Length: 408
Image (cartoon, rainbow, N blue to C red):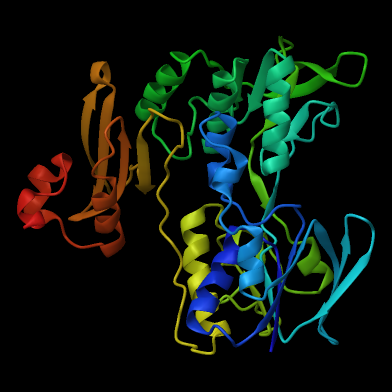
């Protein structure tokens, strides 16, 4: 049988890897990837930007892996059309040549695109998203010859970009519309500790700031960011890290049912066409489109199970913890860490030591955790959140991590 995979990223290739393990000879596999690279670890782009790793270090499946497994890889090749009646995929390579492949099963792993703020000047040179190797290389290049970087968006990706650019010698300002960085992953106290740690590394913050326009230097390159209050800061490089949008244009053209993402069921089949599967950031499962890697891998396992004709896996959704890849900064959050309503909070705060822990309980169950500075027990708290078991008997020592007896 023929399997065609649209998307050569982490979700699609994890599914293929799992499929080869379960049913090695079942399919002739063809993969289309829009980027001219083999599959690489997108999560490790931040250490590449920070100069801690090279592009070659983050490749997950080198070229010869595809050849070894008899996979036809079309890299740098963009899929333009899928005919679901004839089951044909049409694509165009970098040279403009048409490439076609037929399928019995189709796996869509088209990922997502960075959301660019609809402000004047967004088309200027030096204004980029932060998504792939090309963006990372553009930032490294800019850091060689330019001084002032502005990162719009104080979430995980924005802070990783800011940290990497600062390490490459740029003067970096993070612009964030809310009152503290990572406000969707941390509460106010943990957010303040994070801001102090990043300011100590030379990163400036403009919080509660709305970007109104990006200004031109006269030659088509960005020179400054203007805010809604009329103030300006210099910028030769602007990185937009204000969120992602699932890439669903191809799926819409195929007339698959899409909402925010491509709607899939618990077996990762599209609700429109059972021959077509979708995994990763492009997929929407039970109303949620995940932008993190752990759920992508869980989805890949279930999709592979069905493609291998075992048909027993079910994907129930994921509870995803937040972590930040900035060397020397440890934070963790999961679940309903903001609390409020019918919940109780246990808090340990040591601002001078840079340590903060907040556990949120509803009745006798842990429903949320926010840790900063010491995250050693994050994994244990995540297990408690996932299992939903009563912590009544260990409540008094919950703050200090897993009881020693549990190790025995």
